[in-house]
Length: 599
Image (cartoon, rainbow, N blue to C red; front, side):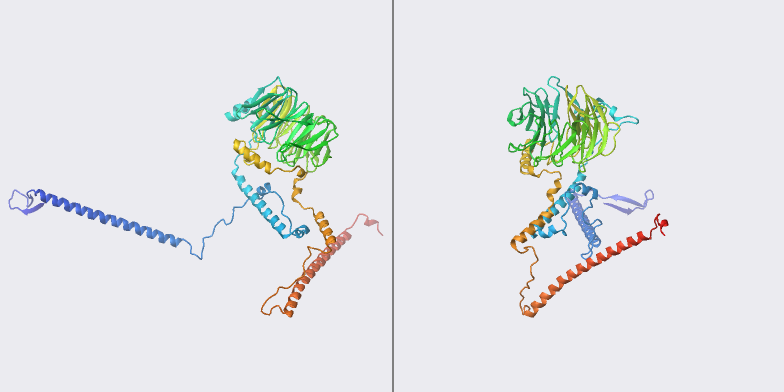
């Protein structure tokens, strides 16, 4: 401890510090303990102050939040109330059916139970429509197209240039299989677009997982092959051989030989009906139910050899082309053609229908390519091809491929606008024998005399697929589950018709006739309005006078309805009469050029 004393010496300053002798060790320990106690007390006081300050801040924040939050009586309004709006055009895209009008006679004839069922079905359909329209935003993939530079035609771009410009995965989809020994080849892609089936004219049949270039099976049937077709899955396929129809599995093992189907030239498989439709050289159109292995229908078309065939994916109607230039539409329910159209002056060489079932494209011996609107059965456009088109195929996005000799041409927007030049073109090594666009891929498969060629056609495939219907990436377990579900939801052949929407409609004339017959048999109208019977009430309110007053009140209400309706009818008739008189007066006041000859 330093202390100051006054010194009187002149050589020293007035105030000078004097140091005390050092303290003992026990005194130093006591001082250190005292300092530690003071430090602990100061730290405790500081922590208490900080904690108190934090509590005060939290209390202020809560109070501020309570002041900002609305009271119970004043709830905060949502700036965007209700569900998000859906554009009308997107709703129309997923529209399924129209609601049943409540003013029709049919609606009043059906029972309350059926009305409830119809109402619930309509609500479920409307909800599914809105959900599909909302989920459409989750499909970001878009179909691209090939665009050239200025003054450059896209049809002049070669497949090699396209394969070099795209990525490695897409470039690997362009390849050639040189199979000149057993050609020419017909082909078919599975519904998922992952598997390829090839059938050579001289008996060679091969199944390929073309995306991974893996060979599933390869056989030679030792006789000529007319056509090949996948069935409901990639586990089975049908081969139209020289004499009979054969069914094989994906390992090349023969499962069935169907001798009722002889001399088959062309085949089409209806996936939702599990029907294999075949056209033979004996002019027979036959249907085979592959789920039970029975023949559903055999129709003699009486039009000669049937080597031109396609299906309408929208309504499962079979289109057949004939040598006299006509195209006929067939259903397994009728022995006669539903529609006969004269399309060409010469024989029909190929027919194709788009996936919406709206347009049909035909080519004939008269070297013309025609586009028809199937809804009205009228021609829309006609094109002249110098050499004609032997094979036609339509993609999921509306591209049309036409084969002429060893040249394949692809046209864009053929159905919607006039086309002056092809979108793409490619020359092959042999004459084209079969064309088929791969589903969900920008790939066109071409079978020709020298083997098979996989072409790249940008914008051909649908970019977004339905995983519950056709999933290209499904596993074996998913395929089995899908097969069971598809069999349970199989559509019966009796429901195939030109207009599928007729199934959801009610035949009003039939209902009226049935009701009239029922009235004649019973002697009274069971749907007539019952006579009003007043309900019994207690406490003297069901006396004779009260019951009569209630009866008169109900009768007066019914009478008022009748009078109101008759008055409305009279007003309507009077309005129509005045409108006719006004039009007649207006016509009478008009002067004619012949009035000058009147005396």
